[in-house]
Length: 258
Length: 208
Image (cartoon, each protein chain N blue to C red):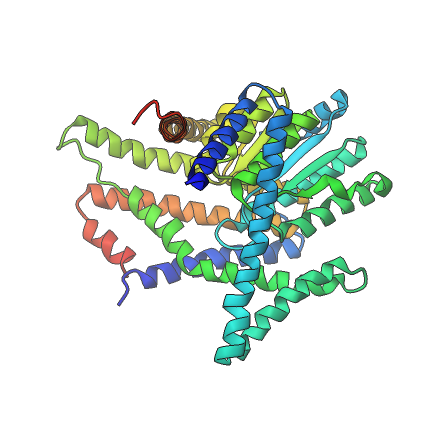
């Protein structure tokens, strides 16, 4: 029998239970508190800077799709896109979105269109500014880099799932003097954004900022539910380390391999 | 014989044009950028057609796998978004795609991203085998907890110690990013060396 199935089931039930419980509370009006992250102000500042310079904004929601392990990053990016597009519409600033995944295109189009409509500026919405570039990773990278060089944006947003193209984008954005806000939960790419961008949303900060901007109580509740998972992880690590240090590894192994 | 020579020259010229982007965006780079995008679009169409033929049409018509008609219909429904009145139809296959792929990863994600990570962080802190291994394990345990604490968003800071512990978590991450940055730059250098070997070896024959 596969070892550890029981423990995985318990973790799954507890984590899901915590998230469902917080969602239920949020629906009854008990919206969880989310601390304001520095990234929120940075995003507002970036849109403001592009507006002052009279330059467009370039937004890339990454190269991940909508499903699978990395789908959540794309959804968080689209959430932030909604806020950025609405702020851009408010200040009459052009926003160009480069898309890699075909399924993301209609959603991004709808988000940007709705943002302009919400500000009563539907006539300013240009469908050609939400562009499908290519499904191939580096062709997409070439497309985004080309747009950045030609359009000279005042601010770039690189938020979502990124892989090897992350440093290419960040370098080009840096060379043209754009204020850059980046964010990804891909651990192997965050360091490039930290090095080359003005502000980086580290891992889960991206999801929290997405929930913060959406104002949706359910999304805030999901973040609060996940926080419970982190508290459990902290408890398990501390307890496990203490047990291991005092020679009681067998107990830890028995629990984890249950 | 002309084919490989042409391919090498083509590869070399395109490589140099792509490198020219490091100096400035220029018409040659723009041309290559558009050629690349065009090629990948053509490749995607060709692959898409091959997939429809090999994974759907042939099994349905020759092997009688009629259930494959369902994904074909779902695929066709995606195109409804180009119509004004039936745009909503495209949302059903989209929901199916997202739901199915999310469900599939649930199986392994708790094991890979929670249990394995927690297990790896439960370390035996002891200085019996030397100072550095013991310190390393202590850093792993404290660092992991501090980083996890940094990512708790729904609690108010009631004590300055919480802020300090979050700052520690941030510092731990920055140190880790520095180390992985150096490692990744080495990987990028390998790619550059590969390209230079192609230019100086396959193209100019200056090195063997």
